[in-house]
Amino acid sequence: MGKITYRGSFPSTAEAVSFVGGHSLLPGLQVLSRILQKKPYKIVRKVVIAVLGISVLLIGAAMILLPGPAIVVIPVGLAILATEFAWAKSILRKLKESIGWKTTSNLV
Image 1 (tube, rainbow, N blue to C red):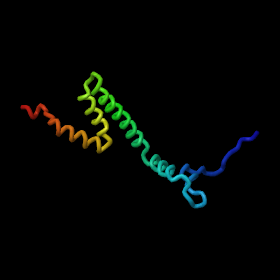
Image 2: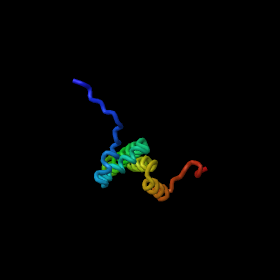
Image 3: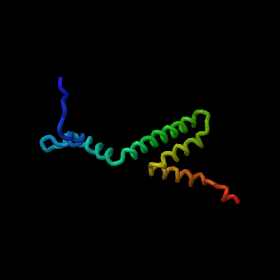
Image 4: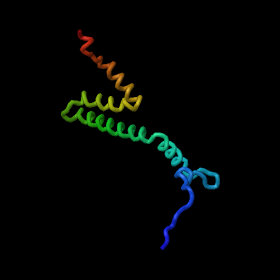
């Protein structure tokens, strides 16, 4: 049997599903395709930080009832999330203001 070859260019996923009779078939797939084509490493980084930060935050929340340093672990989880998410940064800032963090430079 002979080998089957294709002598043309394959359409991208977005092109293949974008127009059927002039109507968009899967608009969600088009948006996802555009996002992934731009900077996929940023998306992967944001997802990894979100999973890691939420995991640490949940472990800290569990330590409220279980024995452990919840008062240390919860801010660490918020700090991890604050590297990518503005909402976590604002919560962490409010937490710092309410606690009144002291540094060694303020004590001297």
